[in-house]
Length: 185
Image (tube, helix red, strand yellow):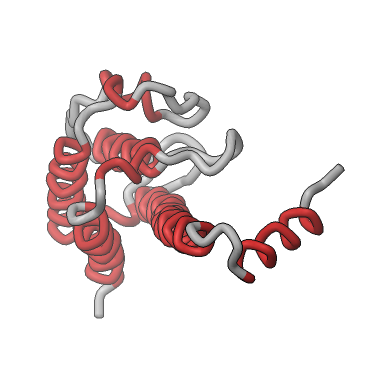
């Protein structure tokens, strides 16, 4: 397999994974922020889109991501109001579109594209693409973790409601005992 095909397949995998898992997801979970140190899924998704747009700019495209950069560029902070974000369907559409453009550039450009000299942190486009893929995959992992976390939070809340419905049950006594042991003073 040629290097350019391998690199384009890696980007296709990330696109497919995100499409498979985010599109059917309960959209309210996109905005859950487990604590102030973590970004919500919507921010991470938008950040991946902006990052892909930046790679496309390096390849000579004009992806028109300026409006998204103020929300999702590195260093920006997640917004508290979900209505201030673009709709997740729009971000998924851009992810797919930018992914298709990226794959086309990589496959059509071949080895010549990968070895093309550029100015900046890396000396050629191939290194930029690999760095972009690693960066993107790191964020795909964050999204996967947050999806699991939001699922477990939702199921633990429903289990907690079930366990505490019976006021005099052994389960309630056990839960109260655990709370007293786990409470930090």
